[in-house]
Length: 189
Image (cartoon, rainbow, N blue to C red):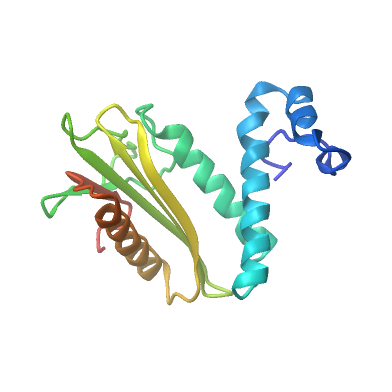
């Protein structure tokens, strides 16, 4: 992750005493704080995966997931897009066309009092692993809830995106949300 993010040296992440995390954060630049917490959160997730599930996530896949997740979170509500793929939006089963002139559509809010669900997934062909993230926001761009997880087996990126959409819809039902807009970057999904 140090190739992409500005993070403290590895020895600063070692547990030395009960307040080591507070010391680590106080010595780091403010813009590094969310990145440090993301690395620690992902390490905890991988630890739980090893203990309670199957523990086969690669370091490369984890790094890709973290970068994509942070890019998405950083762009929510800013009017920017984290990808040059040309996001696709679906509202009441209407799918917007890809922009062919190289423009990247910006994030647009749902109606006042409504929610928007953004889903994304990645796929690693060599291992048939998928990774997905869902972010549900309100009209102000405030994140109402989110989730991410590894998808055990996927045939391709389209299946990973479809599974991300399914998990997102389940998350909406679980929390009582009824998103006005669902946005994905796969028109076929």
